[in-house]
Length: 87
Ligand code: SF4
Ligand code: SF4
Image: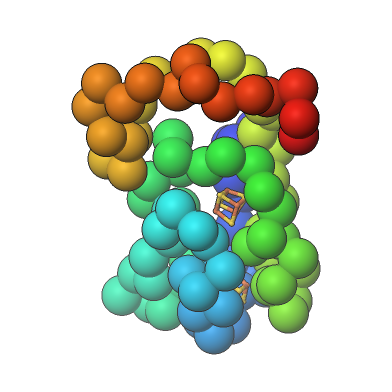
């Protein structure tokens, strides 16, 4: 299964998933269908699923520690100061 699946039968090209996604995963293709072109950047917030008015999106990603980098990361950014236990 794809980590981010878009059912193009249901997608009506409204673009709400492009607005919802905080890490800019989606683009609309030439047929006005949503495509998760930067799926590796997904951090599994499910906002696109929640905001899609037709239920076209299914997120099958699971959160893992395998994500090394994305175009939104600042190279070398030190995150060791973050107190994750406070979340
Ligand atoms: S929010 Fe849903 S219907 Fe709208 S473009 Fe995205 S996948 Fe298609
Ligand atoms: S789950 Fe969140 S980060 Fe992943 S594609 Fe949807 S809106 Fe973007």
